[in-house]
Length: 121
Image (cartoon, rainbow, N blue to C red; front, side, top):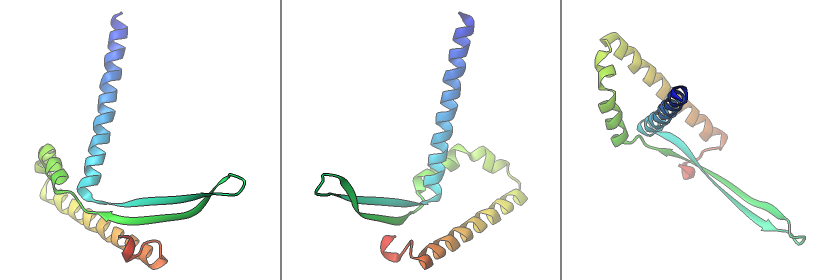
């Protein structure tokens, strides 16, 4: 019986850890901003009664970083930020700038290929 309780406790703890990681990922995504896609599909029925795709539209738009999510992340992760050395902070700053530049290039590419245009943002 004690083994069963221990196993149940381990399952509950691991599922709590998994849920917490999912929340952290979602919070980080919201804090850093992301590109979202709206997909709309319209169907028509043929004379035989079959459903057929008539129109499909994808709209891409940028979701700006959320200040509340940033504040929550900074407040909950204060210790790890404080523990970083100046060199580590500079390295992280450089990494984030490079990531931002890469995202801007990808956005330009999407614009140039017609996948993303100003009306869809």
